[in-house]
Length: 269
Image (cartoon, rainbow, N blue to C red):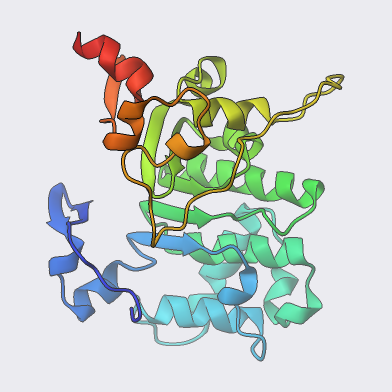
């Protein structure tokens, strides 16, 4: 979608046991897989809901785009069943978005993203604008959906506390590159990359009154990235080598990969 421009590379989806380059598909095929194979939960619910239409209209638009239906009854009944299974009140279908709370709108957005039972759900900061009570409700809703539909949720968030509650594996990214990847338990118990250590160390803990230290400096501009490791200008353990080239993402131990010369050099010796 403009102004997005694919510069290089390929993205493969595994559809019907076959890996397909998504960029090779035409508009018709792309439309078929959106929301049915892969769906999206945006950061703000109003990026999906139409402010001048009732909530039920959004469900109708989504379903009609993928199913041939004879009448609205064939749409409303499955939608009501879906909302009930998620613990959401059916009466919200007759509401306009502005009549609902932010937490309810976000849960409706989650229901919209899962009405077609997609295999992959990309959730972009789904709880960022909510208070902690509503955050917990949305997180629990996502966990219930994943348990019931057996799909994959890719959760994008800066909140490591959210990851701790919902993720099985975590990929830590910095300036567009994955710098560490491991199981959730491993990331929290044994963070290896300096940036990951800053993230874990900044989390508040009950009863802990110690001063939290964040990474010094600021993230780089993505249009003017530094040479070498993109974190080295902020890293207290950086060496000359870090400024010269990007470390490879290598497996330090089973299931745990890190892109840092502190570990990769030792592995290569």
